[in-house]
Image (cartoon, rainbow, N blue to C red; front, side, top):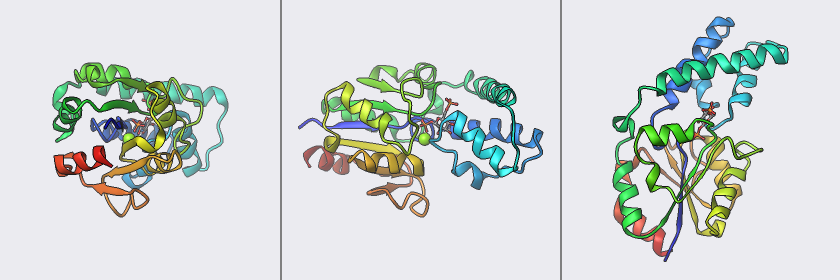
Length: 217
Ligand code: B16
Ligand code: MG
């Protein structure tokens, strides 16, 4: 049996969600907008452009396209300065064990991320070789919760959506997986990710019996 395991990047494989938060928070405070970790929850899995719009809505700010472009560049420059330093130590607990298990059992491994910075992150953390296909923010037109990113991932390796399993830390990503007709596995808090078919606090709680059952299904 071959299944396709699709991994989100930020917040699932690496803890870059906190760097996104720091960079957005800096911009928000510069614009006089209060931006809390609760607000940040809504930005997880959401594209860069949409994230800025949500932050501006929070502060009731209407801005010109020119200003918006400037702020998008500023946010990404700051974000890149954080990820420049990352290495394998930033990979979240349990991920390598799961990736190795799936490789040993000849399962397909795909990346499905909204980030335009996905490839350099996979390279810096030395895990890019695990992936049979990569779909990121440079490939998709419709951001999560639209299922496009995951459907493109399945298509790249000729997999049927119902044979795909998605690991996601964001509400938007779980909704995307569900509307793609894939099995959705939330990584994070049950209260936040209640729409997922399964939820685990992190990958150390996903054991090989659980993976084995998914492969057999
Ligand atoms: P970038 P994921 C998403 O990545 C992040 O969760 C989200 O917070 C971010 O705004 C988005 O990528 C775009 O990232 O600015 O690097 O293009 O969780 O889908 O891997
Ligand atoms: Mg994520």
